[in-house]
Amino acid sequence: MTTSRSDGPMSITAIRVEGKPVNRGEFQYYMAPPQFKKHEIAGLTFICPCGCGGRGTLRFDTIYATGWSWDGNVDKPTVVPSVKQLDCGWHGYLRHGRWETKK
Image (cartoon, rainbow, N blue to C red):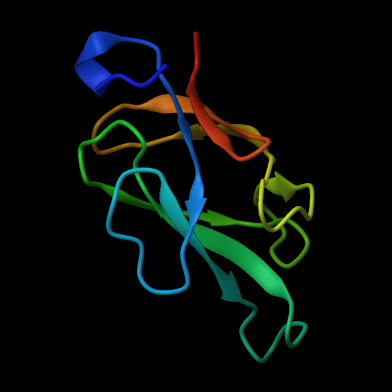
């Protein structure tokens, strides 16, 4: 099921891209800064899945003291807790490579 944020609940595939994310649901990993563990994925940046075009960043708790727990799956990631976009108000989850609106 895919709908815009104004249509209520939705679920879309999270698409991993190598370049800068530009379309809804796309994400890209970023690496830890040199002062932390080198060559380790530190988080991801993404385009809001609701369709508003907003950008977000999730910092993983493996590098930062406060952050999202990530399951380590680079193709179909799951993070906890939920994701809340402050600009548009979208609230949902990234589970098994899918963005899902919180019900």
